[in-house]
Length: 192
Ligand code: AMP
Image (cartoon, rainbow, N blue to C red; front, top):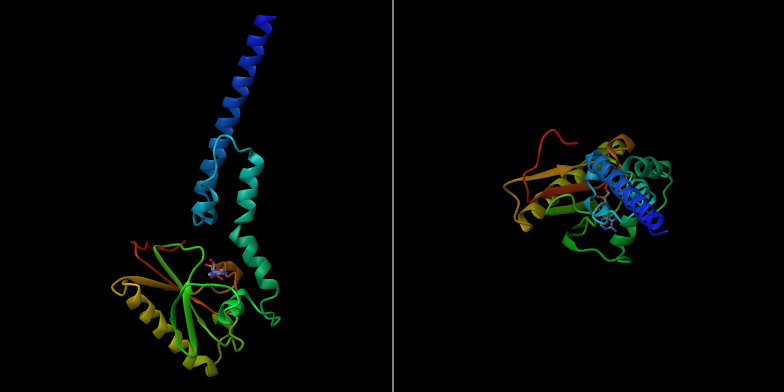
């Protein structure tokens, strides 16, 4: 009887070790995936005690490409975006710079020590840069100039990057034109 219990305990220990090893391999794959790498918070909770179900859920939740494709479906429907709520101050944001045309606020999911979004207060058809028309020239210039002001305010004017993701293949997820102002660390090239 005791020997049977010992064998069962050994089998259970082996199963635990095997599951741990599997979890390790999956975590390694999650870390290796560029889409997931930009969401370190999504993998911080991965421990041996979490099943593959949780790991898969983490991958699915942060699948940037799928989210971008989904967001693109309503891109030009005129439906307000989360940025409209931020402009209206209906949801909180950390504002870095504001004038009558432009709002700049901290990205909720920062990809660098400094990560600020710069947006026009009035969308005026600018769901994405690819929709720009000659009449948008002035606001486009104002957005770029605001990006420089943000870089100065954040102390990164000597080295920063401005990014605009345009469309699903660039992983745009909010269809209200926005500039990402990134800095505070060494930026690599080429970008992912
Ligand atoms: P993109 O993927 O280029 O369309 O960028 C959209 C950005 O908006 C992402 O970096 C998100 O982290 C950011 N974002 C989404 N919701 C919020 C929010 N409520 N406050 C601040 N940033 C947000």
